[in-house]
Image (spheres, helix red, strand yellow):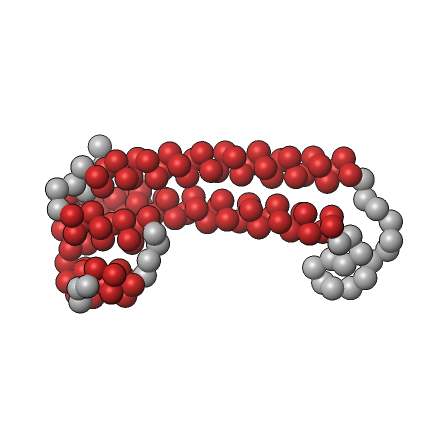
Length: 141
């Protein structure tokens, strides 16, 4: 059974991870838009590489799908920016610069723990100690 502090830290981590989730959603939508465009530019070859019939599909359907994806992309971009601003504002108000940095590297830049430790110039264990203190000092409000 998790203590209240552990539960609070899990909430903080989930909040901090929300930026990377938003960035992945944005990337997925961009890839879908690219796929739609490629399929339109090269209609005779679809993802399976097999030639298809030579008839052109309706451009209005393509335009509607592309518009829909671009609209979703705009919403996701705005959501990502809002999440980033909220997280960055909270990190900026922390007193310890190492704690700020570990949170930025891990949750904003999405670095692996080994990369964070290398970037900060600390051992993996010391980096985790800084992270643990950072979670305690990170204020969600």
